[in-house]
Length: 270
Image (cartoon, rainbow, N blue to C red):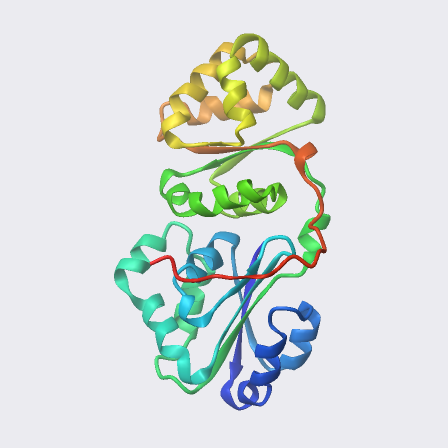
């Protein structure tokens, strides 16, 4: 799930601030957009970008609900300084550069002076959930994985496999897609010839430290005629830097629950 940052002129923001703050944890996305009206500037943050940003924004009490696919935060014009300072801090910027795209745009779009604009962060629409799912293996660079791992583990823990795939895909270096038949054949061959590999696949996430074990397992079970895409991927990436891998089994995925579970208000991680 991605998130959009809406930059709103201070005059408009102040008119609707109370209504937005009251509605933020419970209103629909469309209702909040209606409150914002028109004339804003919208910037997109990828799935990992808003997560690393929100993790340092406890001062603004971000609202995050994995079950309802909700990611929201407001920054009033007179409280913009903390957000701006974090985005411009060199050590944070250098740490985030591996995943930054929309964050860079947001950094340069915000005025250095407080009082000019307010910012409302809202999750994207659920159109992305309509995409046809596919079995796949998603590869992440080590520096990207080090930033995203806590968030990936959290999604795995709560069973949001669709959100986990969206997060990894947004920041992937490469991927391999499987037909249903080839995925089942991949699992069967792993079970017969490389059971240790199957254990890693069923764990969903493999770290860069697991990479040599994964490659050895691939070489034991791989038939290039049966798995040409995986064979090509190994030929391209063999001998290069280790990757973190996410193994997607679409049989585990379900639509987001539209429940009344309590919303989580996140706090800064330190």
